[in-house]
Image (cartoon, rainbow, N blue to C red; front, side, top):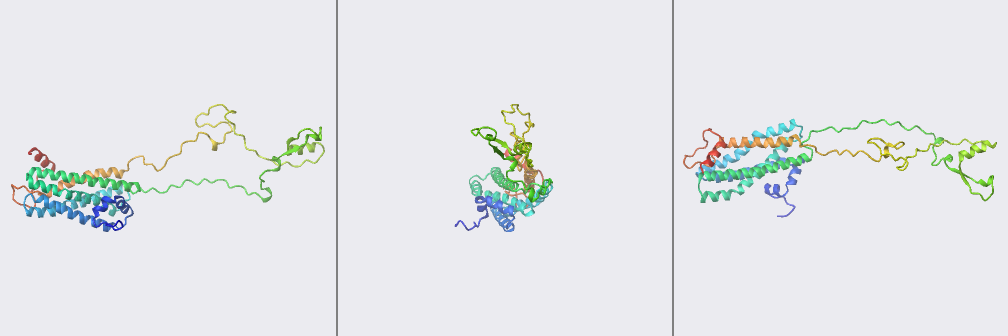
Length: 344
C-alpha cells in the first residue's frame, strides 16, 4: 500500500496515525465521515465476536448475540454521551457534540477491534474446552482487557484536546491597563539639544598665558572659562545648563549589602542587580476539571454497560437451558461473576 493513500481500515489509521486522528478531531475536519467509518467498523467487529460468544449454545444464539453485542455498546454510548458533553460544558470545556462523539467512538473502535482479534483464541477454547463457566469468564476477561485499552485511547485523546485548550474555560484576553505616560514636551527647533553641548566640552586653556610657555595645558570647562573672562572685564557668555546623570556608586564606594527589596543610594531602579524572577505564565498548575470528570465518566460508562449487558443477556447461553432471546431481570452482573468464580 502506498504511503500517500489512506488505509481503507479505520482501525489501522487509528493505530498508526493516532496523532493525525486527534488533530482531525481538534480541527473538526470531516468528522461525520470519520465517525461513520468507526461506527460501521465497530458494529461489524462486535457482531463477529458476538457470534463466537453465542456459538457455545446454538447457531440461533450465535445470531442473536451477533445482534445484541453491537447494540450493547451503542445503547451504552447513547445513554452516557449526553452526560459527558453537558458536564464538559458545565466545567467550561469547548468540546462540540461531534468532537465528543468522535472521541468516544475511537475508544469503542479500538475495543471492538481488539476483541475480534481475540475471537480465534475464544473459538479455540470453545472447541477444545467446552466448559460454560470457564468460557464465560474467559470472554469477560477479553472484553475487560479490550475496554481498558480502548479507554486508554480515550484519555490520550482528551489529553491532546486539553493541550490545545479545548478543555479549559474560554478566558477573555486580559489587556493590561494602559498607563498614560506623559507625552514629551514639544521641543522647538531652536531648543533641540545637541549631541554634545558646548558647555559640557572642557575648554583647553593654556597655562602659558600666565606662566611660562613650557607649562602643560589645563582642561577647564568652558563655562568656567567664560566666568573667568567676565571677571577680567570681558563679556561673559551665557553658559548652557547641562544636566549630568547621577553617578551610580560602585560596590567599592558602597560596601553595605542591600536588604531585600532595598536599592543602594543613588542606584537606578532599572539597573537593580537582584531582579525578581520572571513570572512563568501558561504552565498548568492543576489538572483541568474536565479531565477529572472524564475518569468519573469512564466509571459511569462501565457501570451502565455492565448493567445493560445483564439486562440484554443471554450472550453465551447456558447449554442446560432452552434458547431465549432475553432472560428475566434478577440479580446483577457482579453477583453472577462472583458466583461463576466460586463454582469453578
